[in-house]
Each structure stands twice: as structure tokens, then as C-alpha cells.
Amino acid sequence: MSFFSDFKKFLMKGDIVALATAVVIGAAFKAIVDSVVKDVITPIIGVLTGGTDFTKKFIALDGETYASLEAAKEAKAAVITYGNLIQALINFVIVGLFIFLFLRAYEKTKQKEDPKPVAAPKGPTQEELLTEIRDELKKQNT
Image (tube, rainbow, N blue to C red; front, side, top):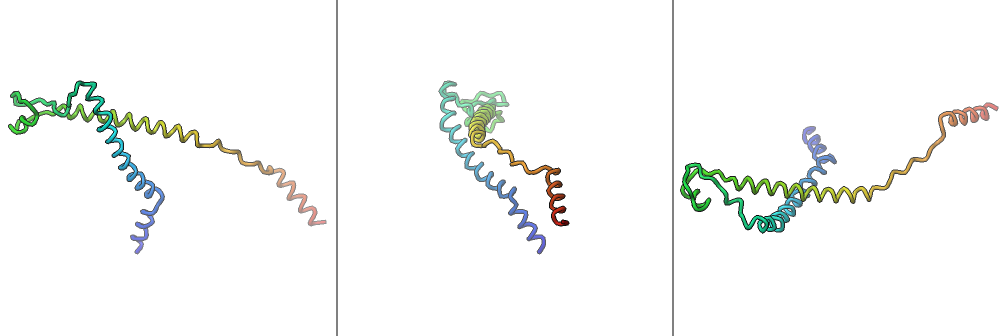
């Protein structure tokens, strides 16, 4: 029975619950970031690059010239789809920038919300306490 109680304690630790919450929120945040990249930023990049779809860029290793990536795949040619790498790098940079901007804004709001710590009131010094104890003991003895 000790194994199950230890496992339950492990699962209910604050760190594990916080981690599980972070994973769920991270998954939801990923959907938002993916949508921003796919639906907002990628079309803008498409306009800037003249409508180039990088995912269609490839090199056929057999030396043949194919009209499209689909034609090369139909011919079962070995291809290097370097366009996918370019697209993945672009997505990585965009996602990284988006997360950086989000976290930067979050940190600025966090700094504004944190009040300056108030100093704790000072208590009596050790000498003052010893003097009070001495005086009390003198009162009791008289």
C-alpha cells in the first residue's frame, strides 16, 4: 500500500500540478501561435516573396527534371525537399519572435504589478531584551 500512497503524494505535489497546468495551457497557446503564424504572418510573407510556396521547392537526386514535387513523388524519385526546411526555419523564427514579444509584454506587466517590498518593523535589539529581562527579574526578587 505504501507504493500507491507515495505515488498519490507524488502526483499531488504542487510542482506536478503546476507542470500539468503549464502543459495544458501550453497546448492551448500553441494553437494560438500556430494560427497567428499560418493565418496572419505566413500570408504576409507570401506577398513579400511573390507568392512563393517554399514547401514545393525540391531537388531530384536522379538528375531528372520534374514539373512538380508531386510528379517526382509519383515517379518514386529520391528528392530533397529543401523547401520544407526553409519553411520550418521561417516558422521557427516567427514562432520564436511571437513568443518573445508575448513574454516581453508579460514581464512588463508583471514588473508593474509587483509592489516594492515593505521593510518589516524593527523589534527591540538583543541588549534591550536582556535589559528588560534583568529588570523583570529584579522586580520579582524584591
